[in-house]
Each structure stands twice: as C-alpha cells, then as structure tokens.
Length: 270
Image 1 (spheres, rainbow, N blue to C red):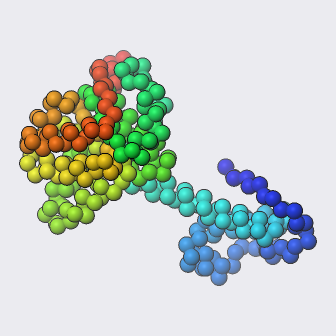
Image 2 (cartoon, rainbow, N blue to C red):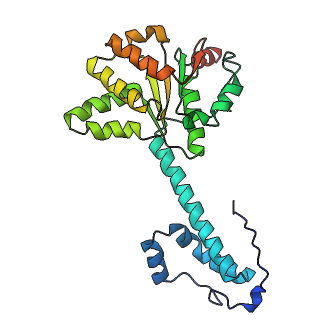
Image 3 (cartoon, one colour):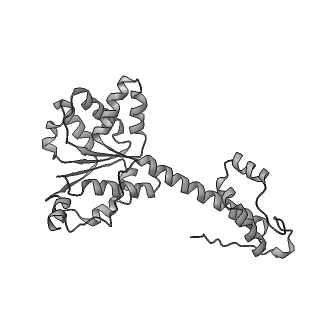
C-alpha cells in the first residue's frame, strides 16, 4: 500500500521552478548509474513515478526530496527485514494467533503475549519449553522468534544437534572460533529438540561453551522433550550438566506443555 505523507509548506508551489522536466521521461542512464553507485536502490526504483507525481502535484524541491528519502528509507528497512528473516533460518512460520491454547490450558496466553513484547531479550533472559513431541514447543519458540524479528532483533533458529554437528565439523577445518561467534552473535538463539540425542564429552563442552558465553548477555529459547531431572541423561559430563542448568534457569521463563501430540490427536480425529 502506498504510503501517504503530509507536508507543511506555505510557499506557493506554482511559483517555483519545478525540480523535474516539464514532460518527465524515463530516468536517464547517468542518474541510474549514480544512484546505483551510491547504493540508492530505493530512489532508483521509484524515481520515474516520483518525477511524474512531482509535476502532477506541483511539489516543491523539499517535498520532492523528502518523498525520495522516505522511499529510500522504506526500501532499506524492507531489505533489512528480509535479510534478518533469511538469516533466522526458521523451518516454517507459526504465530501466537495460530496456537491452540485450549489444547494446552496450562499455558497462559497472557504470559506468552507478555514474552512477545521481547522484554526478556532486553533483560538477557531465557525461555525453556518442556514437553513431549507435538505439544507445541517448536510452534511457540518460532512464534516468539518472529515477534523478535518484528522488533528488529536478530534471531537464529537451529536444532541442538545441527549446532553441535556444525561445531564438531568446525574443529576439523579450523573454523571453530568463527562458528562459535556465529551462535553468539544473534540477540536471540533458539535451540530446538534438546534431549533427543545424548551428547558425548566434546559435544557437551561445545554446548556449554555456547550457554556460558551467552549467559546474562544474550537470550536463549530452548525446547526439550525431557524435564530438568532427566537432563543428566542428555549430557555425558554430570558436572557440566549442573553448570548448564544453573546458567539456563538463573533468569528463565519455564513452561511445561502436557498432554498428547497435537498432530497425533488431529490425525486420529481425521
């Protein structure tokens, strides 16, 4: 939808020499080259249209320039939103409105909506969703991740095992530090499916490295099919298990999702 701007200008625009040709034509090659050189893609996309509007509406120089700058601003913001979404690597889109809270009466919608304000990211707090497969853990984590993107935060979604595999492989090709930084950089890191596989000694150390480095600095959302007392079955090192849990739950919002798989229940009804 076209954005409408309101301008305050007491000068009679008809008395001004218009900043455009009397009969606007396609933007010439030189202007296009300069706009490309200075990375003004937003202006380049709309300049022909704006030239026509400037003549039709008798816009002043300042009005014409302001509209062009707004076009550039909107184009850059739109490109940034697209880039942040691509970098977040969500496997699919789910929203809070899509979530069936009647299926999980133990989860209060008001609490999730409060988290959707993303204050927990500002406070560097964590969120942990615990429950059996199909109870909505990943759905809620993605929904909150999309809200974070809408507020301009950087987000990265990954399964725990994909992250661990990447870090293990990076040891072999000597890119370990760069890969660690990759998982430390986003404002919100979403780690899905903790507990589906047991971690060996080095993999536990990698997981601890991420959790420890983000502790009280960046937010984490974790989904797990195991409750906290069972986490010692996930990690090889019992000492690190305690250290990991301690750092994760120190500033944490924990939700227990109960019941059968939503997907299984729907399939049964069908």
